[in-house]
Amino acid sequence: MPTGTILAYSIPDGAQVLIDGSVAPTRFGFARTPATIDHVSAGTRNVTFKLPGYVDMTISTEVPQGGYKTVTAILHPVK
Image 1 (cartoon, rainbow, N blue to C red):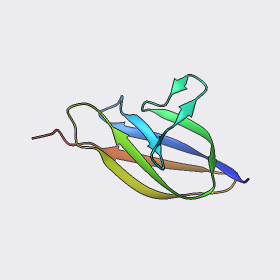
Image 2: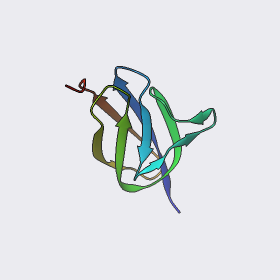
Image 3: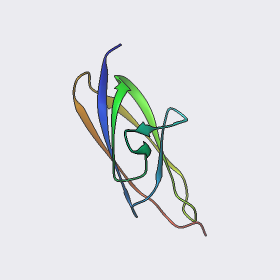
C-alpha cells in the first residue's frame, strides 16, 4: 500500500494527533505535536488535533505517495 508522511503542528504545541480517528503512532510513542508521522496511507486523510482545554480540530488533507504533507492547527480555548 502506498504511503506518505504527515508533519503535524499545532498552536499551542502538545496536541494529540489522530489520523482517520485512530491515534497516530510514531517511533517515540503516540503522536503529540510537533510530530512526524510516517507510513500514513496515501490519499485523503482526516487529521484530528486534541488538547485538553481546547476545541478539537479536524483537517482533511491529501497525503502524497512517497511525499510529505504539513498540517497545522491553530487551537482555540474552550469557552
